[in-house]
Length: 180
Length: 126
Image (cartoon, rainbow over all chains, first blue to last red; front, side, top):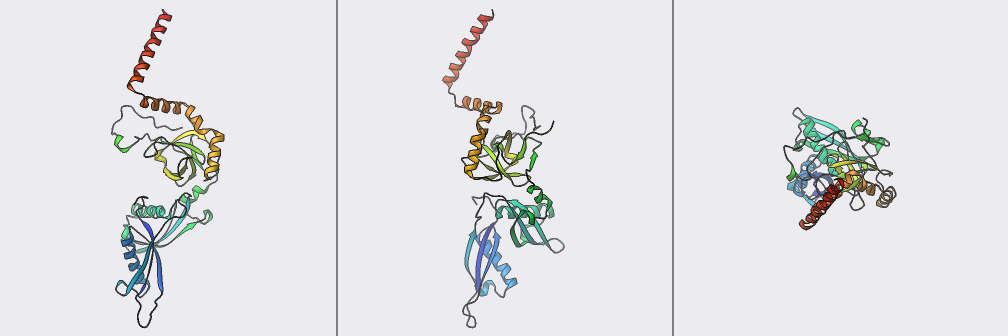
């Protein structure tokens, strides 16, 4: 994972095996987020057997392709619609993130749900995702970054070691962290 | 005292951690409360954490996420990077770099020069 994303987007195409009554069954294409291709195939079967009368035993996967971000150097708003299994039951959720890639937004989503709701990755189903225009966004934490001429201070100057190996618990001098 | 160094589009910042350590970058867009999209003439635009950026006093006049040509033109006309090199912070970095690059012999020569200088000052003050 050279790009640092845990979850990658895959397009999985599969179908029912050809039978005598249906020699050319229709293809089903699904976009899933998974750690790798193997997990993507597994997720495909998990979802498709709930939607269609196709399962691994009577179906086949035609293709698995990874989908890459077309433009990873512009900031976009991402909306994610979810179905989540909590300790009491299933809930639907809608979340917004700002990022440069969809994979980054999905990683943020997994982190966010783990942090706020203690929800494990296995309990999350992504229903839909989308890139949103600024005026389509609803969440205040996202819309605050759409302000014209946005500017804010970083009140604390973090004095950091240039690399992890230079980190130390104690400093010879007390650092000046005020940042004007 | 009000804050004068703000995170905003066009702000020049220095990377203070990691692979790009010591690099001057320009904030071209703000992603969220923790990251900004940063650009420099010799790199691909990418997100950087505010934790890894030290904000400088210089701002250049650009719009959100300009293309490379516009960015370089704005940097050249504002001379922000040159001005940074002339600032106290920039001079300190340059001195540090020069010292790191110096050899044992050049340090010895500097020591001799300093000795000669202080001897002259001492003689003049007597």
